[in-house]
Amino acid sequence: MKRVVFGCSGSESIECAIKIMRSYWDNRGLNKKKKIISFTESYHGTYYGGISAGGLERSCHDNIGPCLPEMQFINGSFQAHMCARCSFDCLNEVEELINREKELIAGIIIEPILASKGGIIPCTGFLRNLVRICKENDILVTMDEVATGFYRTGSDFYFRALEVSPDIVCLSKGINSGYLPLAATVVSERIVLGFTRSGQLLQHGSTQGGNLLACASMIASLEQYNQLSGEFIQKAPLFKSILNDALVGLDAVEYVYCAGFMFGIALVNKANDFDFSDILEIRKRLLYKGVIVYYSEIGLTLMPILTMEIEEWKKAVRVIADELCAWTKSNGAR
Ligand SMILES: Cc1ncc(COP(=O)(O)O)c(C=O)c1O
Image (cartoon, rainbow, N blue to C red; front, side):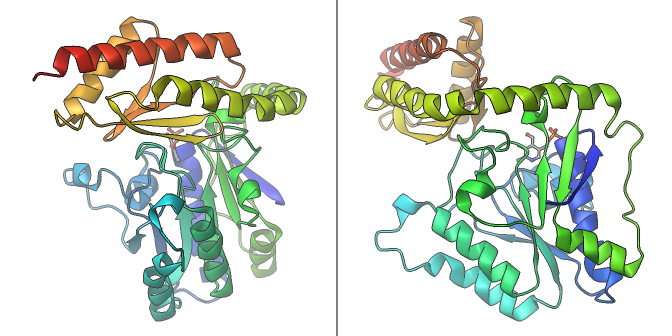
């Protein structure tokens, strides 16, 4: 990666990535390449670019539309364990789309783990081949690593674990652990050359983007990452086994997802039809007990701070397990 455009939020970084992908082709005279592909189940923030590319909660946009035109959604929730014998049939849909419309498609935005959908982890083979097909067909690849970047998934960036080379990477959150508003849209040499050769400037910049205070907090965080990366890599599997030991097999738990320090607990009380209001209620009860969790339509999402001690994690997991057991007991006969 060659250059960074600083901004103030993950949403701004997505906005910037969409502008880069569209203008890259426009600068080369290919002004029909405007379409942006993304996953039906993805979340890309709250600006118009992000809500237009975000597949989740599209129904909530009715009163704020119209969103950006030329957005195309594909299914991204193919999970390795869902295919009995993988033949990558899951790529048929996108291959057809790309063959049909590559002259119109500027790029794809990939949320590599569908965190807002509950931590769904798409099959790595699917993601790798998706990137390959896009690259072979002149479709720029943006990885939205706003949530997954900076060791959240156990490795520094998820695209590195996937062994793919995106053209653009969107970063925020972990860049400074959220202490100050900061985002980075990081671009490859290909993008830089596209702009410099055409003599065009990127039409993006925000007054506070890359301000000194936020950058100081980023540098301090990066130093910590460099020092502690070995510890994070060792700790992630321990966190996973602690969570699995405490939760797998409980009546309220359907299954547990895990990628590094990103956990999803799918809650299904088979006998009682767990619904969304139950999930919100459990989240509220956990909050009163001092454990802050996030939620999705399928259950709870946990994103512990990476420096959390093992003992603290055990304690938090115990509170969650106890709450889920108590929930099953009190709602079992509903
Ligand atoms: C994958 C992803 N992209 C983009 C965003 C938007 O980031 P921000 O809330 O900083 O605007 C988020 C935030 O949750 C996210 O998880």
